Length: 305
Image 1 (cartoon, rainbow, N blue to C red):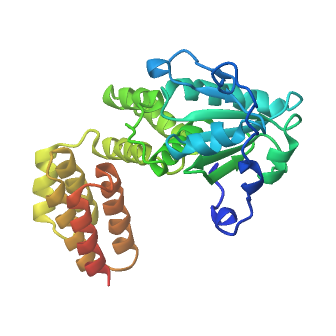
Image 2: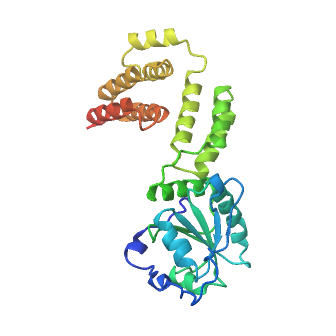
Image 3: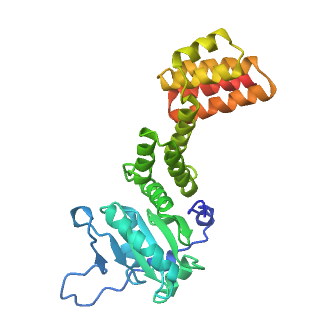
């Protein structure tokens, strides 16, 4: 599964009707003690003793999921004792809930004990996980997914719930970056490709892999001689590509982009496509948020069309 999320259209079409679960539980005639909340667990790592995991039943669903989700995103984990995949996913969810420090709550629903909740959510197989924000389900996935994708999904849920979250550090990226900085390009490439296999849209890993390619291309080159050769031979494609690589590594990315955009204008056919692809790889090194990249992309589009 490349993306744990499913389209939210099933929600906007009204496929998930939770109205039957909103009926308040009858109040006791003579309360003799303060009302008790649903059973919950405060796992190690929660900030300020916040609730991390709650076992939910039909009687507590309204207060512990629907009402709680008005202020805190709630992730509902549908599971059963006999479900082997659930035994893989649930512990990861519980650990991430503890890490969240109360930013979100994990509500566990045993489908055998609470078949009506599962029916309302149209659960056809487990594990099934829903995100509930503002009293409504906003996203879901089924099956076991890699932890990296699960973290990305949770980040999106928190943002949808208006929770300000810091991007978590990724030890996989740290390992890959360390290999790149130490010059072990093979190890760096392997590490970045592994991240992209698990998280295909990881921009940091894409940039790292592009940097590996850049480092390989300039290995052994004499920067001064390469720039001089490019100036002397403006239509030599290989000389211009190497000069652009060196300019990027020298902190002159805008000059490199301008050099290759100009070369795109002067070339055609296979040479032109080769230059375009090379320029795009340099954009990847910088990342999509770089304003110089945005400007250069517009210039490239103008040169191409």
